Image (tube, rainbow, N blue to C red):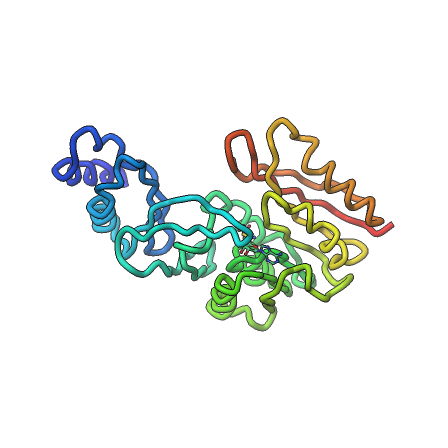
Length: 276
Ligand code: SAM
């Protein structure tokens, strides 16, 4: 990889005005055979040429221009700037993740959390993933911990990949997927462990998580928190809502996953809850 950047620069310095060469991306993300490239505005008139060179040097079939992730379904909406097939199979920690990288988010920065999940549960647990995506966090639990998993995903498009991934990873015998809003999920008092891998508004879903939880359970609670409220938050809000619902809480662990926006961090708490 040491030689890749000079090689890309060398080829593109013959095609681009010299002042733009220094603006070429030095970092990128490769997921399976798809490349996600952050491109500055100034480079956009040359995006096709640039993408082609990165694709050829790095040996990928498709290049996407990195953009913002947004909306309820956390969609990427990345523009295809080279190739025509944004669906890829990315292998990580023995798991195959198939998805459309131009539409569905897959955060490289969450890799530690995906790996941590691979040894978090016992095989006799029932785990409910309330924001399953393509199975980012719950496939490692089904595959490596061999626990039973219920995965809930609201977006019909993302759900198709979740179902495919359950088969690709051969965990159909212990992982079941529902294409519904998790607030419509009917199970009560069933889960030993709950994953809440969402951002911005995760607190709104705490009452539902407690309904799904057994009288004693562990909740992996993600949220995005402004730095000035840390470390009090997000636990203070979690505790307040849980107390109102008749639960005691014990904070087992708190981790920062990544910077979400300037001055805002994506945090995950492991919280033990007990019904009073
Ligand atoms: N949990 C994974 C992770 O942390 O890598 C995926 C996270 S992604 C940010 C959140 C997923 O939750 C999206 O696929 C979105 O469509 C889904 N989602 C959002 N609201 C939902 C709801 N009310 N019920 C079920 N799924 C929901």
